[in-house]
Amino acid sequence: MDKTKPLILITNDDGVSAPGIRALISIMAEIGEIVVVAPDSPQSAMGHAITTNSTLYINKISKEGDVITEYSCSGTPVDCVKLAVNEILKRKPDLCVSGVNHGSNSSINVIYSGTMSAAVEAGIEGIPAIGFSLLDYDWNANFDPIKSFIKKIALEVLDNSLPEGVVLNVNFPKLVEKEIKGIRICRQAKAFWAEKFYKRQTPQGRDYYWLAGEFINQDQGEDTDEWALANGYISVVPVQFDLTAHHAIQNLNTRKWNE
Image (cartoon, rainbow, N blue to C red; front, side, top):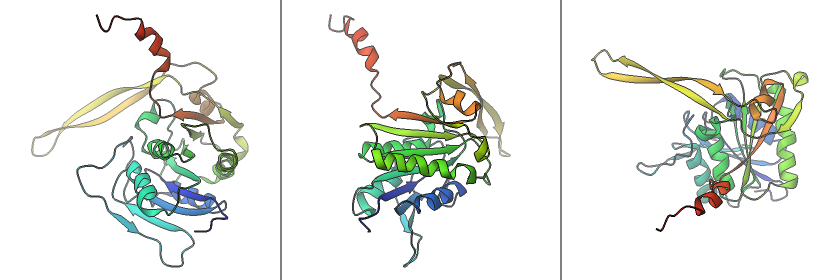
């Protein structure tokens, strides 16, 4: 490995062949040395799942002499990061980037996102990490308008790192480059999914369910990721993986737990 260049780990949840990760690879190749470890099939909405009850496989899919080293993994996005750090890479990466996800990971979606969970796992390992998502669910989405912004954000993190225990959740609106108004540091909007299960039957008469739902944004604040995306801005939300509700500790300590 070339120690004069930053080492960048790339992963995603849409699979190693997804157009989003191919776009991210092309951008990161301009910045540093790249190693790709990504799922061999789509792993969307896997959250922070890891594989514990079955075997994991890694296949090297790049060829000898290729500029970029690529591996496909049979596991989840978090598995990909764990295997990269512990088995594949000779040193800790200078940056981990995950995505570009086909679809938004703003607001409550960060909880379910395999893209963001991969970035969070890298953060747990002490690696500066960013999850990138585009608000376009089309498999053939156009990633060209956001490439310059991805490069800018990645270089900023490489140059100045991130606060301890923090990774970035970056979401892009579906706009042409000249229509994007800029980058806004945001908080996660208070929103939820009003879920509905469609109950159907197989030809054999067995019941099955198909999850659907409506996204409900309860937050009218102009400092949120949802507001930024709706108004033509790139949202950048600092995400922490310490899930402690620190603001609740004082209140809970006033209760008579031991009486």
